[in-house]
Length: 263
Ligand code: CIR
Image (cartoon, rainbow, N blue to C red; front, side, top):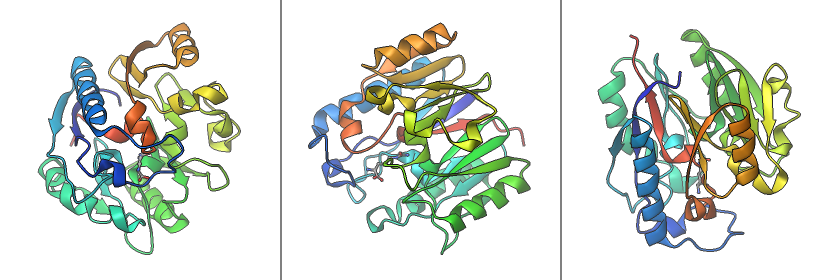
């Protein structure tokens, strides 16, 4: 599942600092955010992925977080449904690009369902579906139904009592039946059959990493997790994320990773 072909990204735009954020880390430096995004794109390329870089879109301050705008697999693509007005419409702007690759196998989350791509975490033929402040039970149920139509199983992970934005903010699947997660997620029932690498509390942000082919990309500056992953046999590369973090974005949020199509 990590043999991605392409990734779709969009650089932070001029209105990036007006996006949604809990704001605890201060205002982002937009020029630095754009440079960090460029480094992220270069890292994806070094991992062997062809990267599509879209034009920045000032109408949508959070539009660099493309992960939220579509969920894609080798079998189908799903167009999500944003609940926050400032993000509603991002998925419409992205859809023509998804259609180029997924003509005929595009599904949609429909109102009153809401769902954002950041609440979907794939582990082989299984999906963890976060129920969060952005993804409601109806949206999660619709996604599970779509997934099952294409041969995937799924589990719901209710993270509403946890101070975290999306499911992928706090966990990722990196292969070999292994999940990386933040301390608050370690008791999630859905993880009970996985090998779980838990970050320390001060490194919780780094739980959002991305496996591409034989590499795991993680944010720069989290040495404890880097050591744990290396010790577990993963080939780790890092990239700076400080300005993206200020807008509540993690490493996975900056791209839609497209596996090779089998159909
Ligand atoms: C938002 O609050 O929607 C953005 N500022 C951050 C989105 C991060 N995306 C993600 O976790 N998948």
